[in-house]
Amino acid sequence: MGLLPFRGADSQTLRAGDEKGKTTLMSKRFTITRKPLLLLGISAILLLVMACAPDAKQSTFGTSGPVAEQQLLLFNVLLWVMIVVFVLVEGVLLYAIIKFRRRPGQDELPPQTHGHTALEITWTIVPTILILGLGIWSAITLFNLDQPPAGADALEITAVGHQWWWEFEYPDADGNGKYISTANELKVPVDRAVRVNLRSDDVIHSFWIPKLAGKIDMVPTRENYMWFQADETGTFYGQCAEFCGTAHAQMKFLVQVLPQEDYLDWAERFGETPVLSAQAQAGQSVFNGTGGCLVCHTATGSDDPAVVDSRMQSFLTTETGIAPGPNLTDLATRERFGAGLVDMNRQNLRQWIRNPEDVKPGNHMSGRAAIYQTSDGRANLSETEITSLLEYLLSLK
Ligand SMILES: [Cu+2]
Image (tube, rainbow, N blue to C red; front, side, top):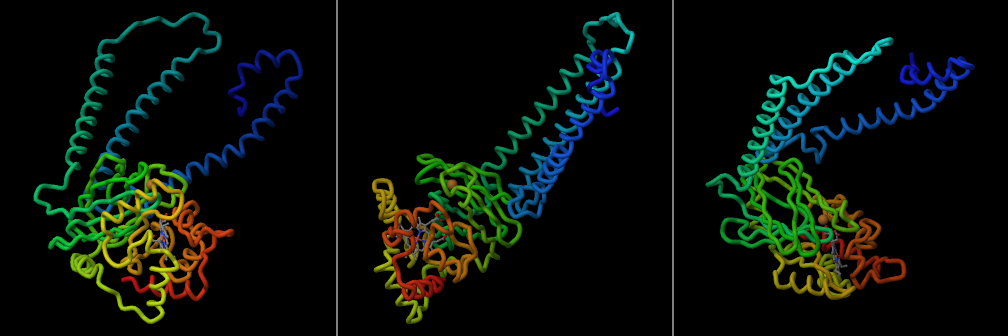
């Protein structure tokens, strides 16, 4: 029975000689390949099922806002309609293949017919209605999700993609015209629509917060936009979804969805001068002086757009020295750093300062900052300097 697929060949070639020998040879070959195939099949199914876990941090199957919800609904309906059509069509096909197969001893052609008007009309009209319906509904959803609902008082944000981190600008963060620019962690209020303008300063990136909204590309010289709204507070995970170079897979970000008051509190306090211990003050001197951090990072409030532009110009026209770096003003309030890559704590931060290349290969900090142009790529700073620098960085909140 296991040799069923080979029956046709068998009955012709085996009759002549050693029937038994041939059979065992074939069944042996069959068992040799079956096991890895089975394992492969099981792992493929497991992987597929794991990908659907709605609780996974970047799963699109567990949504937390209206935009992602409508996109998921559209996806689910399209998927299930297609599954039903697939099963129906393949089912009828299999039924016909089996039921009308050629039987042994049946040598004449069966009666030949051509066309069946009722059937042909049905299988033209039903798919047309399905495709038109789903197509029109997809287009309606697309237009519905284009802009936040009228009168929603959306929070306006501009997200700029850089190799390989995110800059976030708030033209009016607190409702009183306060401009904020920060990086890698987007803080937004819960239950309020957020409209995001998407730009890129270098190559094409794609902005994606799987649980809140689908991805939209960030294309240099062209401004795109999208919006989302979070229905619950918490941390959401974002990811660059367009290959943008060496550290593309490590170009992540976090969205901190805060209660309204906490968000406003953050916005109002952003850029206030932090309290610095004596050691942190020593760290600040390293930051502004020997460390050369100031060349690429601002740590005392929002970035001046003109300064960001000039850093960008240097980045484009020189090999080393300057690159636009993430704003560090509220670094210590962030849960992660390195563009969502590692947890924010003293130990990880120390590792980053010593040698960013170890943490995030290819990044433009170790590639360009003067202090890392050493034979082993480690910071040209003493341990005392690094320790006070850490003290300073951890006071930035
Ligand atoms: Cu990217």
